[in-house]
Length: 255
Ligand code: MF3
Ligand code: CO
Ligand code: CO
Image 1 (cartoon, rainbow, N blue to C red):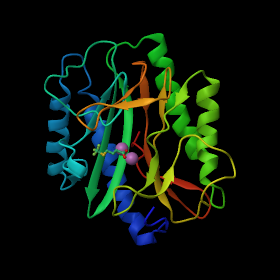
Image 2 (image 1 turned 90 degrees about the vertical axis):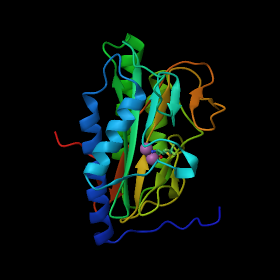
Image 3 (image 1 turned 45 degrees about the horizontal axis):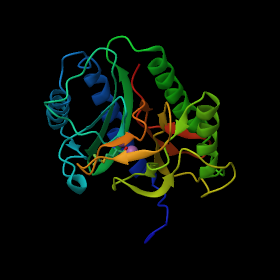
Image 4 (image 1 turned 180 degrees about the horizontal axis):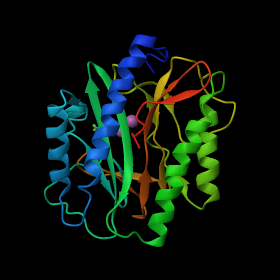
């Protein structure tokens, strides 16, 4: 890789990340009520774009490496990077991940959640709950002085113990005034291995957990990643900052 250096953010920069993260979380809160049978993913996208502009922010995905929309909407077997479309209508029993990234004053906040459309199947419910717990455990594994491998190990151990698999082809990432930067944060791995975790590092943890095989295929649109066996996939994502004594979640919803 051209530049493997991990940038440590200043207090002032972390304050900017806090504002971007908080607004991104608030956007997901706002979109939650739209997740109902009968709505198209394009309608959710368009409301996200409208709300983002109204709040003086920018949608980072729009035109990012050619991505055509403002958010990613990934239904059922779609792992990530689903493209909102008027032809894609939510139906009872679906699961949908909505992934938003906002730019506020030049800094990025990146977060996603998986939602149930109506009542989920028992399998879908378990997969989504396990995936949410994977993110929680991944965050709990972050300690200044620890290693990036601690995060993946905690996630992989739990997901596989519950009979699910961890996507390999997409990973968490450093984030600041750049969308995707060093370090990479795999959601699988070995404790004690990988880059050292230091105060001032800011990165995402965004486990994608599959019902069946971990293997992914990218569709001809160049973006939509689906499971190779067409079984379900779920994801949750937070942007976090490493502090002197632990970790701060920058995209935590106000509850
Ligand atoms: N938000 C995604 C992530 O978690 C990236 C989306 S890039 C896009 O890193 F181009 F697909 F929008
Ligand atoms: Co991300
Ligand atoms: Co994201």
